[in-house]
Structures are given as C-alpha cells and as structure tokens.
Length: 290
Ligand code: IPD
Image 1 (spheres, rainbow, N blue to C red):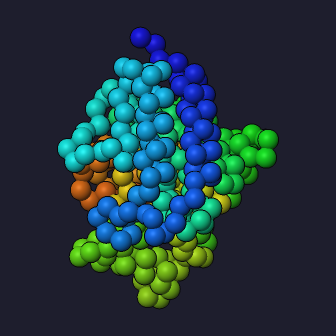
Image 2: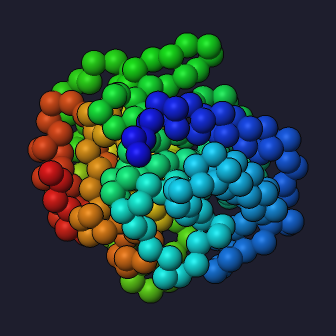
C-alpha cells in the first residue's frame, strides 16, 4: 500500500506534542530516577510512560508498522526493512532529572532501514524540528516555521573554525573511555600538537538535539560513540535534509545490535568534504561519507 509520509509526519508531530505535555508536567528528581547499566544511564517513570503513550498511539493508527523504543528494546531486537517507528521518549534523561531544559522526544520512521521521517521536539523551549526525506527540514519556533539550515551556510575553512559537539554518554569503561578521551583531546589540541584546535567542544546532553543543532548550522560537527538507533533516526533525516552529512562507523548497520556504534555529523556548506577528511584520524572510527 502507498505510504502517505505527510500524514505520518503530521501524526508524529501531534504525538510529540502530547508527549511533551507529559514531560513538562512531570516532576522528576535525580533521586527518584532509576539506573539501567550504571549511574549515568538513567530511566524515570516518565520515560516509560511517554514511550507507552507513543507506542500505543502509533500502533493504533499504523498497526502494520513495527515499533522500536529505547525503554522496550531487548538485546537481539533487529531493525528490519519494514516501516519502523523508532522512538526515544526522553532524549536527555540526565538533563530531565536535573531539570536542565535541553531535553527532547525523538521520533523517527525508517523504511527499508533508511531514516525517512524525523520529529524532534523540546517541550521546555517549545522548539520543534521536522523533516521528511526529499522534502527538506524545518524548525518551528515562536509560531514561525523556518527551513533548515537557518541561514546560508558559510564556508568551513578547517576544523579550527568549527564549533563541535561531543558527548560522554554512559559507556565509560575500558576501551569506550579511551576512545572518547582520545577523540576529545585530539579535537581540542593545538595544530602543533597534532590536534584540530576547534573553537569549542560542547556537551549539551541530547543526541537528537545535537543533530538538529548541526542541521540549523549553529553547530558545525557532532561526534559520539555509543548512540543507539532511537538517538539518531529522527535527527538523521533532519540533518540530511538540511544539507548535512551523517555517517556511522559501520555503514548501513546502524541497528542497535551493532557494536562500535560511532556517529559523525557535519553541517552543510562549502568545505564539508575537507572537514570530514580532516576529522579522519582525529576522531576514532573509520568514516566514509557518501
Ligand atoms: C542519551 C543522550 C546523551 C547521549 C547518549 C544517549 P537518553 O540518550 O542523548 O546525550 O550521550 O548517547 O543515549 O539516555 O537520555 O535517552
């Protein structure tokens, strides 16, 4: 059957807004939050309640579509070619429990394993990012809708003119810690020390919002090791539609079961390829950007 992407997109937005009301009316505390693998991998009742709302609403309207969500994912669950909603009910749970308003609901649709519709909504700032593959991406803010990127992209001369987002994430043991530390210091180090001497490194705490930040053009680059499909699916569409590139270290295998999940995003604009090449070697993971 024909899939009406516009209708799905509009429905996803209405769900994201309803989820947003749940998120802003909750009163989480750092103490009430439970942890999954370790003290930095948090989950709250709100994460679970929001995922339930989202999955129930989507299944009711699109019973033939698959659903994958952060809170109900089980190791071994694989992403198939079927149309699949991929949801992170609260991306930035750490921020949420600290009441730091950099939090989003990230809702994507993948078809044939390709991110196709993306909706990322920060209910605290009421900023909504949306995109449909082939149809551009937009930010909706203060009653206005703007196409992304927000202004004609300036040329990126080299990494030393870039604002770069990175995240520690919650995997910090053994090699994970080494890979991240190495990449962060490589990016920050001076050219004389063999580094990128970027303008600044930022860690805001939501993968989905970081991707949207690169889509707007405010951030030039985002790198992270350890994201999951629900962290990146929606932002992937929004970024690509804004002229950005995103690569995973295991091209085409971005489903949750793959180890060594590493993502690199670079905004649109002249110099994009050179920045990708310069990043090669400074960030861990072999990236080929098509
Ligand atoms: C996390 C956030 C964080 C990123 C992690 C994600 P969650 O999502 O996006 O910024 O570093 O990799 O898992 O756990 O808050 O939904």
